[in-house]
Image (cartoon, rainbow, N blue to C red; front, side, top):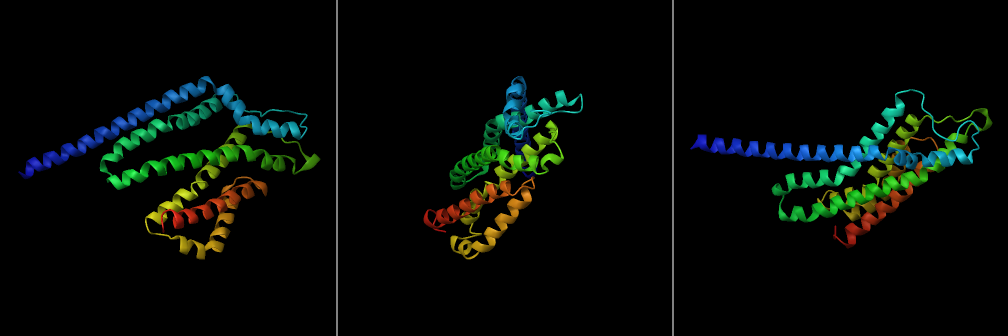
Amino acid sequence: MQGVAGDERRMTIVEHLEELRRVLIISFIAWMVATVAAFVFHGAILDFLLRPLTTVLGKTNNHITSQAVFTSPTEGLTIPIKISMIIGLIGAMPVVLWQGWTFVSPGLRPVERKFVGPFIGSALVLFGGGAAFAYFVMPIGLNFLATFLGGSAVYLPDINSYLSFLVILILAFGVTFELPVVIILLGLLGIVSSRRLRKQRKAIWVGIIMGALLVTPGADPYTPTALFIPLIVFFEASVVILDKVFKR
């Protein structure tokens, strides 16, 4: 009997591994398909990503170049591939999340399944909002950095460095915009409460400001300011939601 039970347990583990393998394969295929589709339209995608830079170059009267430059012959191909892979991952994210949900949902209780959907949806919306906000405020900080030296030097933008800067900025805004989801989740788990958060408001505000200064890649004063102001608003809104909606 013990041998039979052991065989059933091993079969259960094998079935889980097979299911995980299926999820990974489908997710990888979705990523590859989305990457190929992004590569087909890489010209339009690059134009969109470079628009904050070209806007700044147009305003700073850069007479040497009005576009980003690349210095290595291979970058003409590697940069579109890198961008296509990143955009492909973003495009495949609904499929990846759906596959992940089909893998973990059987092990969740009904009450847990009830909250997973809203939390994932909120996290995606907030990340997208943070990424879009970073894209639109980037020219402000970039203009400050590009013109800080005045006439002492001319800004010659390297496309690889610029895109790395843009990706870091988008990730910084996107991830930190998840603050309301984190606070409400901690509140539902009983780790924090609205009363405790109100008592520590000043310290949390200082932490938010310091965090914004640390995670933003530029040295300009505008980008971290554009980050910590909405984060403070999100914090206060999360406290109200915990208190009034979830009674925590």
